[in-house]
Length: 474
Figure (cartoon, rainbow, N blue to C red):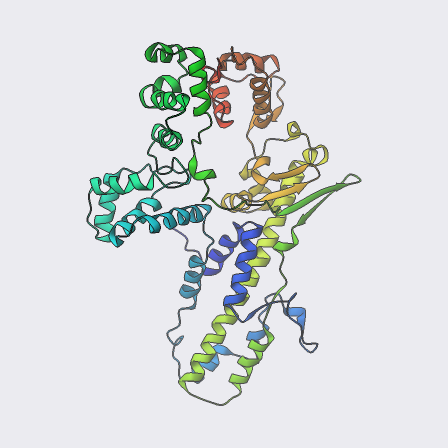
């Protein structure tokens, strides 16, 4: 049986996965939306108001103000039709920050509005744009999109019509956008660069369109024979190809503006002691509005008995409850972030003292989850999109997690150490005779790491390093 999360739990989970910048925006929005929530740093506090209960206690629902009793006394046999939990949860969902893909797609939509004047074509174009993935590719088949439009939106169109619209979208900025595969992506970029006066670009187009398989496998001799070209012509063409962007969605002109990393944690070492702090921007001084609580008390003692009063009480209660839940979720987020970071530092203390990547110990999400007595999913949300500032630079939290490898001496080391050895070896190799996975495996064995060739291949792929054949240079 699946456990259903309460609105408060859902709110906490959503806050937990936000980084510092997104969290600040969320707090600002909540302050705007809920007048019962106040920022203690920007609000002047009445000297007669007791701040000891600011961080979310139930003072406004004390014995002096029994809201439920008040509602019953005014003739309400339930919650007066209010659905506080559902409404609040819905607001939370609507206010979740957009992924970075959003602004990129908005940039494409702006171009679509300037291109398609027919409203039907514009809506179809926007649907195509929304199907483009973050790296800029449209991998869904047009037939599937046609079926989606028919069944989900009752819009009837054809693959041919979508193809005509797609061709126009593929002329949008950045070059290569909305391609369906790498070959089409590269050709779209070359077409935009081909002004007829650069033979290297023309040859590059021919290589990508006619010799893509041979080029991807670096079978240069085959390309030279097929196209009857010499080494210099091939080098010039390849020089143009390597300038192209294989993922136009990630660095296009319409992608998000430069995002500056704001560390969520600060870890410093002084005299052998390591201090862990949460970025103060993650700890807003929130409190419940005293004026709202006083208004609720005033309504209780008003003696009136009408629908308007019940509606006012219900509205105030909703806002006060919402403010309390938000404050509690913020506190819970702070405590979870700090306890998780403390656990990471305790396991990776040597790295935080020395700054040497090879000092990192094997550590997986489960290790931290057991240490702080939280679910793995909770630790995953903390580690995702969070950064820590150290004496040795700023690192993503994911940097500290890695699987373990046992050496010949029986010592368990982080696979990050293995990857660093592989990366250094490949970086220093002779590019005319690059190291094969077999050679890399032997190199690791010499250093005491008995690792299978397929494991070497896996780590190499995780480092985004191609096989030896594709690393070979002319």
